[in-house]
Length: 176
Image (cartoon, rainbow, N blue to C red; front, side, top):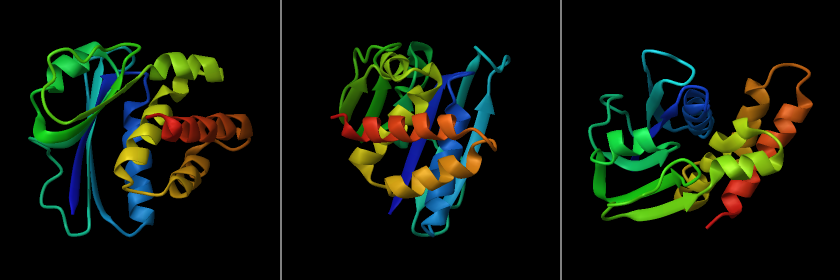
């Protein structure tokens, strides 16, 4: 089994963090993992994407030409990567900032992650909402493992940050 995922959005949306959390959780569950980041010319506000591969066997290359899944957080990323997905695939789309017009094939999960994050009180957890939604569908790693990674990555003394991210992860996993 190998799952190839492209995660894309704009700088400041936590795209790299989403990829790192997923990769770290998969490693904790004894999977082979690659994580390949790519930043646009500007970091915050520019384009950003990363490629994550999770497998039961060694992975030959971190580059993903055709993804099994896309996690898309804004419209420019949808335009850029919609041709880089297999016919049988999973699309997780932030419908607050991207509309999945003209997408053919695969399963489409579209939710207003940005709006939901605002409802939770922190726009920065939209990425973790998307991750929770993705993991509910794909079940690559356990949510408890992801929670432990969130705790590990959080700065010391930021219990509120941990709490809201865990809340976002669970809420994302409840979306259908």
